[in-house]
Image (cartoon, rainbow, N blue to C red):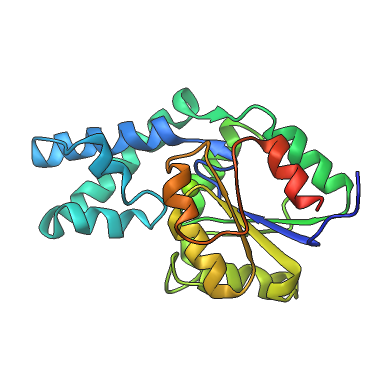
Length: 215
Ligand SMILES: [Mg+2]
């Protein structure tokens, strides 16, 4: 393989590195039914995925956000090991990037305990150089702060980095941070939604992603 186009490769976690899409959908459905007595459509549930959980709950119901948040997290944590999945080809991609000497990071809106739980269920095939969770910045995607925080920890510039994610919030965050943005279609959002954010590329498989990363 050729040298990598960017020495720093940052990934969103949910719907990008790990398939937590059904886990997240089912957690929302449970919490909304339990607290509000009914759940909105899957499309409404999924529209906010990729932003911090509390922000999503405040959109569903400001007065019940706190209870929704805790009900979601209880069910989500109890069911993570059962519902979390790998994406075909993702582990191979990460190992290849690590072997090529890339510095690798996660930038997620998830809280740290939920990230740790995910790795407990499906251990990471690589050692991450940086993991940014919702606790690390006062503001979150689509704001550039989480991506910039990862770059700061790595002592890297935006020009050296690419950020890869399955949501428009990921691509907005990358664009605002001044690094390259790549959308992936195997998570929550479709090609059209991702392409509207003007990413460098939108890819359908980890193999296709590797081709873009290798230039
Ligand atoms: Mg995501």
